[in-house]
Length: 226
Image 1 (cartoon, rainbow, N blue to C red):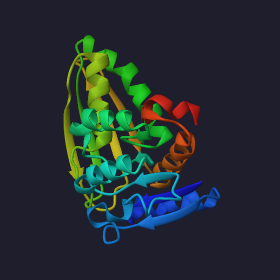
Image 2 (cartoon, rainbow, N blue to C red; image 1 turned 45 degrees about the vertical axis):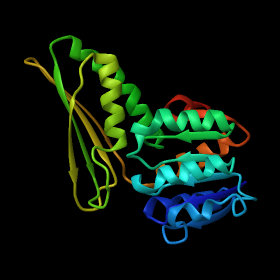
Image 3 (cartoon, rainbow, N blue to C red; image 1 turned 120 degrees about the vertical axis):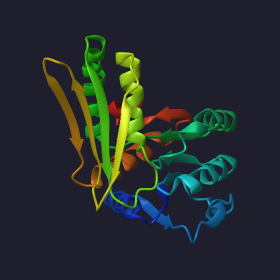
């Protein structure tokens, strides 16, 4: 498969490494090469099967629009753009491409989501809670997409919207904690990423899964099929 990776950051570099290890043809475009999505013109995307985006909240929407116009399938790991989800969904469906996004491509995090969904029932039994998330100092969006997903899951399962407290420090890959407290006990749930490689492997598997498909997909709903 021919994959174009957008973003030369730490995660983008790992995605390229994993994709090459899995025998894919890989090209990478950084911010300079893709200013205003110029690397995504239809004539430049001819041989590309899937575009994987790990850029910035400021760049990702232009990249999505360009890929939709070029009729190229896309996997998006960039966060911070979810207020535009309804618009992007309409664009994808009306243009007949494949599109898959994730707040987090780690299989472990998606298992964590399921665990938190079960635990959120405590909020209907005189518990209250908070969500804590820590990431490296260079991460631009706060709260993280993963923390927002946790908040959404907990509200759906527990009927309460929990406060998110964000920290940006050092080179923390990503730590998410859900604390559910009552007068009788406290429940601590935590996922601590040791490496960005789990995100990279999930993104490449997502691209492989998306090949030949059309539609709008959330990684949380399809990761078990990969």
